[in-house]
Length: 326
Length: 290
Image 1 (spheres, rainbow over the protein chains, first blue to last red):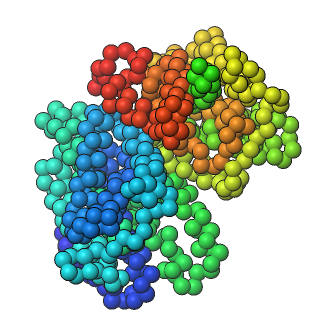
Image 2: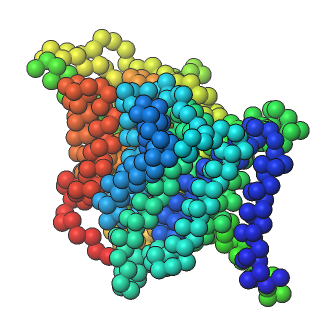
Image 3: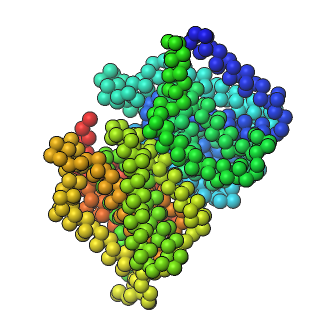
């Protein structure tokens, strides 16, 4: 099979697989797991652009998810605004946050951005906890209504699944266009050599800032979807641990690719729910795996950076090109 | 006035701890050009291992020495297993590995010592000391003494010993150091061990006052880094100054404004310094050569 056929076939198969899931899976909890996977994928598309294409590390993306979630919750529950407006505002607020953080810190070297995003994330967790009049503090924010478009409320598990994955598809098309056109080339040039990119006339700060804002926007949308799907949010969801999980998904997925990080995001999300996914699995095994969840993320980051710096994406690209020559 | 003095003492107490963690950042940065995101976990490990051993009935001195030695060994092993295979090169990869390492070390402590807070007895018992109407806990005196001792020993080692000169040579010009026979890779391993020992010392010294748990590493790392960058990354004296300034800022913000702001201070200082003056208060001209 030629490379070109494969390139059109794989996305097609992915769409078919995603469409079959709600037909095969009738269990509401299982569907919810696949919905969560979609929400994580939305965040990871943004991080794949930021880390995998532009080479910038963020340890604070859970904070943008949180900004989106609280914005959507507050606008719908307290202000009674239409859901779609709240959803869009969630993206706007998160990307404004991204812009405020990115403008100064992206002028600096890479590790300063990692530290700036880390402290931004911790600061936002503190804010979510302390700003009780908006967020409800540690007790959380409950009673968030389901998504609705005009008079139609989306509350069925399968409809929620569709809503999330349609948003993912739209984001993916946008990201794909971004990476295959001039902005994507500029990002990859940055990843290669900032100095070289600058010499070729790439506005490096501009590209970094725009990429960062796009990734914050997608995280904000993901937060709004999470809040509406689950109906309850609390500061413990949007912590450094979540940011590290996102980072692990992105790193395992690999750089310069969208497909790799997406596959990694789905796999690493599903690992959390093995008990529900594999019916026969012993309870102890599932619980042990659950308690080693964070270890898996940490080890995955270390092992991939040492042994397979290109992540999943590079591994299968290499395999494909090997197959072609033999 | 009494309140002011009390806040001042508390600030210098926490500031000393931040100074120790900041020194760890500075040492590794000098050797590798990268930030070690696992630095806070060394602080955590020092306190946790010490508290665990002392809980087993070991004398405090033994528990403390073993905890520092064990943490230094963990720092060296971590460097050998995870950082050395990268072979220098892109600092981004070093950063990623230390982020992963921070998670793994934290989880290791969770699996070994459990999720509960552990306590360490005070180094010496007795009533607080009085100074102009303010109370100074005996443990605070220990913290100051140990920090001063650590800084003095470090300064002596760096100035007077062959090992210290080799460390400094590596941080100034790695390749030139290798040309004159310095084992630069060994120096990187040593820098991780030294940074780990300093972090562990901080974790041990403060554990009797605050208790400690497996998850204190990340917030400590951020504070230590805020201290390091406040002074100017890479300069040990500036790191100590940064630690003390940060401790005082925190203490006054918590005392005069609202205790809620205590943890926010370091984060805000970190962001403001990064944005406005990334070379630090004591750093030279701001231009970074590309």
